[in-house]
Image 1: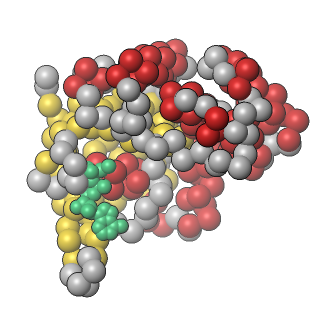
Image 2: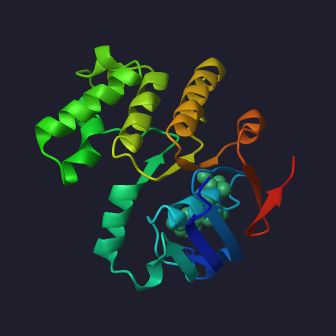
Length: 229
Ligand SMILES: Nc1ncnc2c1ncn2[C@@H]1O[C@H](COP(=O)(O)OP(=O)(O)O)[C@@H](O)[C@H]1O
Ligand SMILES: [Mg+2]
């Protein structure tokens, strides 16, 4: 196994400013290294900072203090457009509420990340192949809202993976699905991640899912703590 770190964070701190203009510290002095081809789960109570942390490592939020190297690139020295480019090419995000674009069809949603540097025909072909693998070939021309929650999440997963990103981030991805659907989707998803040797960080409230990770972190007291159980 390749032990190269995909990202390294040291002394990370993050504050938000509240409506009374005072600073609230969400993350304090956090250190984290993520090896390629590993699965990491993050658990912890609501409001503890899990989404805030994922947004930082997913290059969606660059307002933080500390050192952040992503694939050996110093993010604090990186211009915003460059950061956006890195994110678009190498990170896939999956959210609890799918975040599909309702006006676009299933395949158009999945094609979106590809259109940045591929033509429409090629983007369509790649997306069609992935949707077939995801058992959604009969749904490609549907609008997302015509699909079940489980199918919508499969589309969102396909969109996150279509660019063949190195790093996948999933934020309570099954939190909005019934138990059976959640189990099916999660099993399918983890399988795909393992077979395609992706690096994964996922936030979950489900203990069974969290235990499938190589490393389990608990978010508490503005920091993450490695757990052994
Ligand atoms: N944009 C924001 N502005 C101010 N406070 C925020 C913002 N986003 C999140 N927070 C606060 O930061 C804390 C951590 O939020 P979050 O990272 O979403 O927690 P979790 O994902 O663990 O539920 C919460 O108290 C939340 O209210
Ligand atoms: Mg959250």
